[in-house]
Length: 359
Image 1 (cartoon, rainbow, N blue to C red):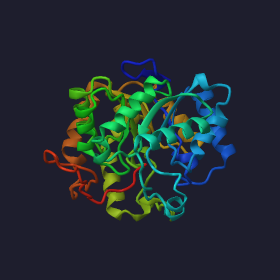
Image 2 (image 1 turned 90 degrees about the horizontal axis):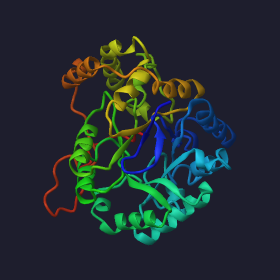
Image 3 (image 1 turned 120 degrees about the vertical axis):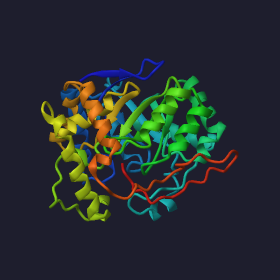
Image 4 (image 1 turned 180 degrees about the horizontal axis):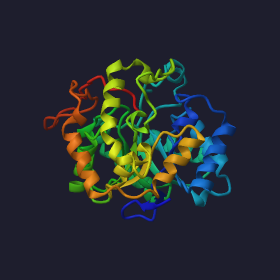
């Protein structure tokens, strides 16, 4: 396993991290807490993974409690990222929630401080390595008091790095751009990015390069909702509770056509590993968060860090393929979030393009 450091800090993390949403939410199959703890410990002890990404909304604190149980007495060996912003403490809203629908958000300074303190309690620690505002919208980007609160928490030693996670669907381009412009000391952005879904992630990185010199990126949906894992076929059927089941069949058929153009990446590694190496070719990517839900995936993805870097020729070929949508003629992707420059002084209302939850 190789390691990278968030710019301007001493927070060093594994190039492949572990997103705990697969263990705590039930969206990728049910796991007991004992099974989750065992997998987290295996990721660290056998694979060298040190970066574990959670959120208070994952199982209403379950992910954080699992991390505390896994690494009790070994806190100094691991790096905790978590997210706040959703009001998981509103019991009526929590009971009314269905599937992966979003809860109401509360991001006033008092609510953020309350949520952070509860995270610290569940994680059994006195500091959080990376705190992110969970699925920040434009109204949050433009709330200076919110980011000042995170700076205050950093000065107090409760957090080491602060930033924002954008989602839940792919998109949110100008939310990220404006955050980099308004808060140039932002330390981290989490976004969706992959070989098959390069926009708007590439533009977000360019915005950080221009305006936020110390901003590092953590990447989720690294395998385009599993397409780049190389396991799907035309006969693949998704379980009833899987959001991919509700996509048109063309998503599967077109995706398979696209990944077949990437066979040249798999002479020395799997397609799933090559997908991670493509992301890690960008120096601003600090860590990647593939969906890990079994021991085989854990080993395959963790081993990607030590695979050979993609060559300049391979990177150029991927870029050329992406420019032609990998040879597939299909309707343009619909996005959520602000995907066109908002008017000066606008409220920043998001244009809902019908994107999907892509955790």
